[in-house]
Amino acid sequence: MTPDALLAELDGRETGVPLALALAEGIGVGLSDGAQQWALACDDPAAVVARIDGYLSPRWVWWDRSTPDLLARHNLAIDRCWDVLTVHRLLHGGWKTSIPLAWAWLNGLPTESLPRMGQLGLLDAASEEGEDAEDPLRPDGHLRPEWATGGYQETSDRMAGWASLAFSAHEAQLALFGERDSPDRALMTARSESAAEMLCAELEQDGLPINEAEAHRIIALAEEEREDEHVLRHLRPSQEVNLRNPAEVKAMLRRAGLDLPDTRAWRLEKIRESEPLVDALLTWRKAERIATTYGTIWLAEHVADGRLRGDWTSSDGAAGRMTASAGLHNLPAAMRSAIAPDDSQRLVRADLGQIEPRVLAAVSGDDAFVAATQDDDLYEPVAKKLNVTRDIAKVAVLGAMYGATTGESAGALRGLQNNYPVAMGLLEEAAEAGRLGHDVFTTGGRRVPMWVDPSVSGDIDKAISVAAARGRFARNALIQGAAAEFFKVWAITVRRRVRHLGARIVLCLHDELLVLTPMEHADEVASLVAECVQEAAHYWSPDPRVRFVADVSIVKRWSDAKD
DNA sequence: TGCGGCTATTG
DNA sequence: CACAATAGCCGCAG
Image 1 (cartoon, rainbow, N blue to C red):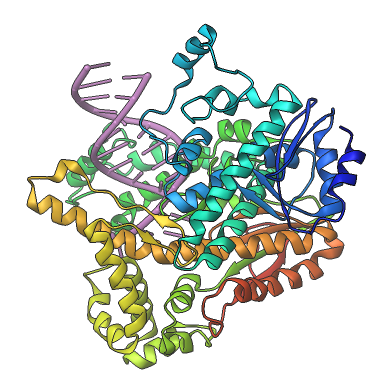
Image 2: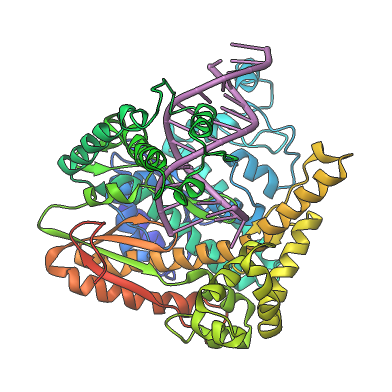
């Protein structure tokens, strides 16, 4: 089959119709619409996908990240897609999964008896009668694991079969959405999370622009400051101490007359003014961190052709936040001046303001709390209502979302419950579900699985403390998870809206975006990024009255101050 | 060599 | 010092 013949067959179909896809470099493309399947042998499958996408603009259905990875390598950006494994994580909860596991779960097959690769290879070599190696399904209904790990890529006919199964999996998932409380909302999430997975493929491909000379300068400075002697010279009598061993550091401080329960920075910070030894230790630790974690080895491992790259996942972690390796999400502030493009480009830096409380207002629909979001600083009206300072109001609101029970926030918590009963009630309901070990669901329909630690049975105190931790976790997961969903809608909207200007997202950081843009389009990109906050809010927010805000600025380096 | 504990960094 | 994450070094068990 040729691409032209295929396009003729697809003629007249509606935009957005689901079309499943499997492909392999240099081999071909397999497609399926559920009723028919097509196999195209060709060298450049991405070019075929580009033609169909331009012609029909379907919703591309694929099994997993391997497909957008290939498309991203060919610089083909797809906006409308359905990633079966990403949707599986949404429906099922958790992160660990695989194509055979998702297939088994969707088809009600026992998942304990999932065929494993090694033993199956032997069985297949024996090739029982009645078994067809060209069939991706075994007689018991399970997927052949060797198909999932590349076997489907051998011929375009196999790809067509593989695409056909992806289509079936997608239909099974659609049926499950129908059983949800808010099917339409969960479907929206499935689509946006799938697009976010494609964005992750691009983030891995592109990387962050990094000025290596500047990075080396920062590392060299840290190397100087991490000399043990800078700390040890404060000791009388002089002594050898392994500063990397917390127990030895604690003993060292005790000998210096400082008896502390541990040596954590927040504790030491309080006394560094009056204790030169402590001040030197904290300075040493900061330098040590940069030199060990973000030193020359790190540069060599993660930087190539002027880009800093890590692995990206679109919905890792408890509640579905994006994660990145290579330290991209916890780069020390001191290193951020090295994140900079060449002079012909700029970074548009944007971050959502007070995103978690605003999301709480949106998902709870609490009238009074929604009203507070009209303010640029949401904590001001809250403080006024509670008759406390702005700082206490902030700690109280954050404490309510994290499940704090002690400290300053405890007192203000009663004020929050009186003034914002709907929002606080929602949080408490989630916490109670978590304590009981019941799964909770984000507003976008992500299942957040709870767990029961079997090791606590018999130990009442421990069981209570584990249940309490689960309650805090569930309470926060509703907010953090919903914020992650909103953030991803914003990110994929930006991705789509700035593309024609040659701009690309190069970093996603929970509430912050970095967009790399040609200098001449920086102003327009910045405007679009700001507009996209409203567009994303309109699309995502369960309560249209909630106001979302963002800071947007054009910078040469990530570290540059916002204007 | 793998793992828990401690510590750092970030949102 | 509550929620989430990645990542390093240490000592200790195997």
